[in-house]
Length: 174
Image (cartoon, rainbow, N blue to C red; front, side):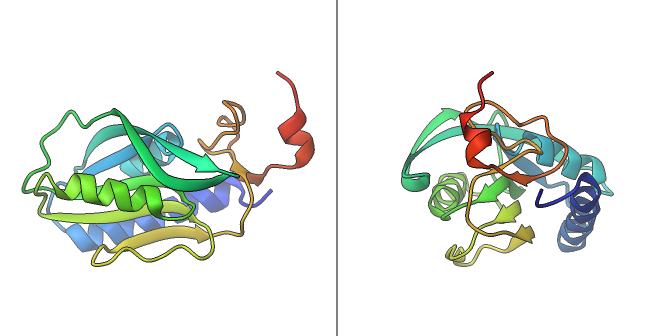
């Protein structure tokens, strides 16, 4: 286990407070990245101490050897107009940063007032996003992390904690 439910929820509350401090009376759009960030996005929205709108994008990022390749396909686009709005891209984990750079670029084309990134987890050696403020819950080591919305082949999303998946967990059936 990397993080308990209590540790995660305490950090989510502090991230919500940090974001509210940044945006004040603005009503930001929290853009959750489906499916891994669904739990985090909902908890962040519930902890946000002022009105916020929630919208969703779904993407498929292709990987080689469990690392993102930078090749991304849009599966579900935003249903809201973000032009002139403050946008917070909410993701469960930033692995290499390639997918996040694609998201930032794609949303920037829609002329939002601002873009901020908020990720629950960030792995080592992730490049920073030029001119994009980034809020991170926890810096974690390399490895496959599951739980709190993150999965391995559709399993383990329902865990309330975040855990490093073992080889036995990868081999588990059902």
